[in-house]
Length: 249
Image (cartoon, helix red, strand yellow):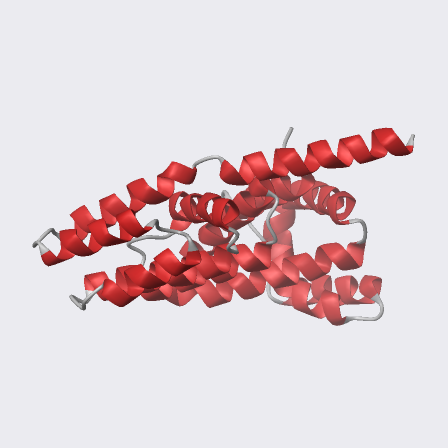
């Protein structure tokens, strides 16, 4: 069953009637001492701008109110829900330059939220890792597939997702720019993300005239050897907690 937060993401990234109310109000409501007063003020502003009737005619308030209530249940309080929404809107603005505008950024952030929830990783760390990959690789190695490879490799080698993204992103940046990748490969080896053999193989491929795509595919194959490591670590933590609670009982 989808979480309340997942429902909110779905409601507010699909269809024309997204965020009419929230887009206007979230920052103001989040900062207001009197939340009800801020909501009323926003509704008044929507009347002035001719937006309220459009939203009401389309029946958007029903779905928005349901998703907001579910989000409050997930986060524990209205303030926590508003804070998380405010964070998400900030992420949408920060990703807009990388993915071609605010509309694409909203979908990108929804993807990151889904990834963070599914893997039980903090959204801030996921967003930081994705931003590094977008900047360093210009999107050539980014998104859920890349993040999953790095999250698993990081879990298996004791690296955070953010550090793994920085290291791999720098390797790909040097590779794409035609620079020697020796130092970047050594950096990944020192982090444990590559074995000595794998690092040497990537360098030999690059020196031997392999294409950027061929070297990148070899890197992905190496990282994929850690597939499932993050989930396995989470399962082990759960088993330890279960044993602890069982012993306490």
